[in-house]
Image (cartoon, rainbow, N blue to C red; front, side, top):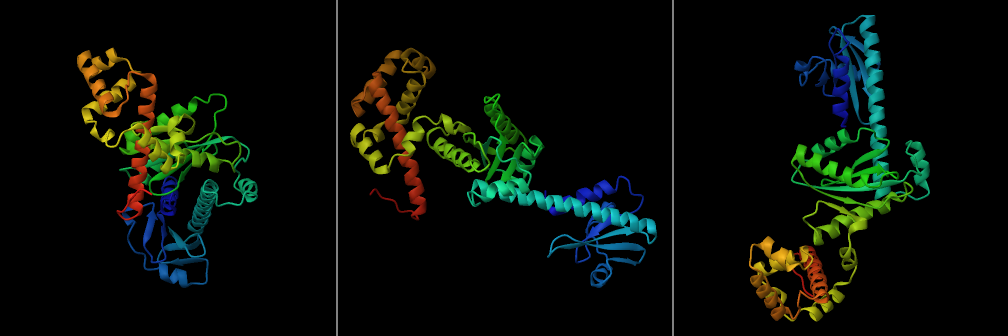
Length: 372
């Protein structure tokens, strides 16, 4: 929550029990929060005199004012209508309350910054247990990182939704890493590990429904200590990257369910090009039209079952046989043979990986990319 939101929240609470107008001014004398909302945005000409005064409390023009230093560079002025002792007592209570709320907010911001630095490995390993104790974060609690990548939405909206989903900030920390990435660092449910999937689905459904965001979620492996959550965060990030290459129709990617994609992603491009040259004759894959590629995809999805593939494609079985014969003629691979089907599937995944790499290299090189 931003400082201004915290100020307004406190003043709204004050308005529920206070029988007179109270509010907060910035250093320019603008009322930024007030029990009488119609006064917000208006100017109080007494502010400058109050700031220049050496007194902590000032009374002028029917109001009692008190300085409220927040940080070394930020100060506000609280005021209450009235000049009697009751107004002064109210003012002191309000200032103390707002001061405590802002201090807690600053503490939350420092804790969030610490956790982000842990995930990014910007903290010295020896300092992590000490700082965790300082921020009252249990060190040896197993946790798992959910990395949420957001497209086509305001990050601040998504953060608010996640705060509402996980109000207990002791078991789940919501951390905005950058403009497109949010991490939920959550206690790992040892008794019911399957909860991980249901939690990810809930996050996805809520963000899709309430923010209309396009969301992908990567899930790392459980970490036994706070220091090791950096590894879970890296794994979640890798899950998203690998998933975007090989399984971009799936919105939830788990590091422990990446399959062949994880293996291919770690292969050097030179080796990948050699493998493709072995499997496909030059220009063979490019010669396959979209209809043929769709047929191959459905054939694989149905575990090489020709009857089911024909039914789903609404074609006669002989048409399917013709298309598979065409693939064999172009690529020299008979997809009805298990070994050839595996080889084609693996080669097509390697090709996807190289295409993704080429796009990345092209962007990085300012539009120039070539094979080594």
